[in-house]
Image 1 (cartoon, rainbow, N blue to C red):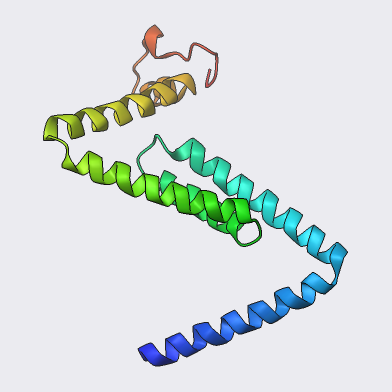
Image 2: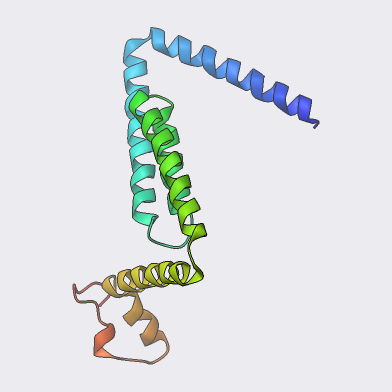
Amino acid sequence: MTQEEATEKRSVMRRRWARWRDRLRERRRAEFVYRIVVGVIGLAVLGVGILAIPYPGPGWAIVFIGLGILATEFAWARKLLAYARERYDKAMEWFHRQHAFVQVLGGLFTALVVLATLWLLGALDWMAELFGIEYELLNSPIGLGS
C-alpha cells in the first residue's frame, strides 16, 4: 500500500467515524451511554497508567492512551492531554540534559520503587523460596504473598 492509499484510507475511516458519531448524537440516550462507556474505559486505562508510572515500561504511554480515550468525548481531557504531553516533554528534556550521575540516581530510584513494591506484595519472598532461600526480612510487612 502506498503512502497516498494509506492516507486516503485513513480519511475514509475518519469520515465514517464522524458520520457514525453524528448519528449517535441524534439519539440522546445512546450518546449518554456511549459517553459513560468511554469515560469508564478511559478512566480505567488512565488509572492503570498512573499505577505503572514509577515502573520500567510504558507507564506514561498508558496514561496518554487513557487521556486520549477520554479526549475523544470530553473537552477537559483534551486540555489535560495537551498539558500533560507538554509537561512530560519538558521534564524528559530536562532529565536528559542532566549529568550522568543524576540520570543514574533516577534509575536507582526507579529500581528502589520496584523492589519496594515487590517486597510489599510478597513477590520477593516468593521468588526467594523458589531458590530455597528463606529470610525473614523478605516477608511482606502487610502479609501479602504469605
